[in-house]
Length: 115
Length: 111
Image (cartoon, rainbow over all chains, first blue to last red; front, side):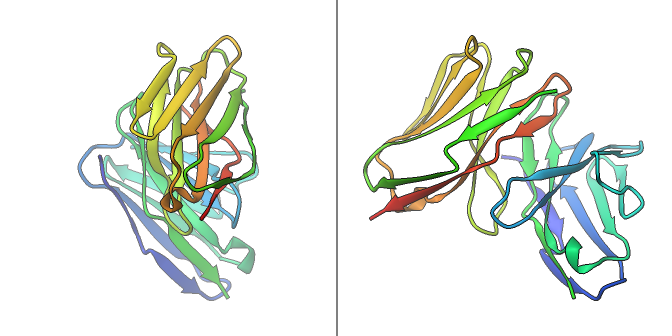
């Protein structure tokens, strides 16, 4: 199947700093990428949908000024958590869709810990 | 919008027995239903999917059934093995091509 990479796999940062997470589709072009957050023992929560070359669409309750998403190319989307706080600690997973009606492939996730 | 409900939240079965996880959806326009398996700390992995023009699909020990009239679909795992222990998520793709996720089922295989 298609491969989606995510970097870093884990990161520890201090409260108030910003963290950037990269999501790349390695062997296909992804016009649409998704960013999820998953807390322990819970389902995936969609944060935002990003389409290449346009602004991301954020889900209700997700602060777009805090979670900056950039999808500058067909193979790369980035999520920047700005002014991170301990409550932002979570497992962040991206996914990329292969075509409009194609399958969604997930990245390996990034474990963010804010101290 | 689409709503997906998944049951049970936890399922414990004896090794070798079958496991069934059920999901219901609300949007009759939904036409694609994938199932994902997620092991602790890892990404969800697509294990099987079904489209609305098919009633059943099987892949070795895993099968999925779809009842469009009742708007429910189920995951069946036969001859369960310890490596089947994981969290399983169903999803439904709505008319905007967004995946709407179930809450997940923690499957425990008892030796």
